[in-house]
Image (cartoon, rainbow, N blue to C red):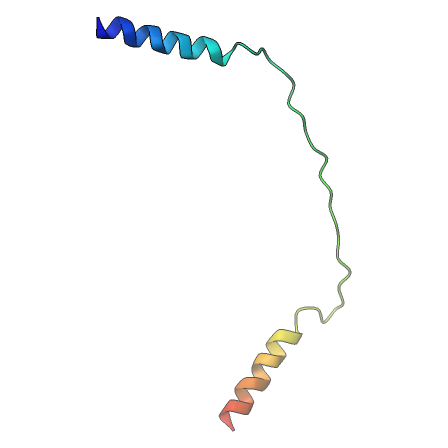
Length: 58
């Protein structure tokens, strides 16, 4: 009896999954933003770190 009730529950759960039909997925356009960078964009923080280490060592 438990197997029949379990099979009925699974059947009802599976049938409600397809009740809405199939819709095409909505794809959002990808927006790519480029930041204006300079050639020395990533060098400032390492230079500050080296200066702090040199200051602490002296």
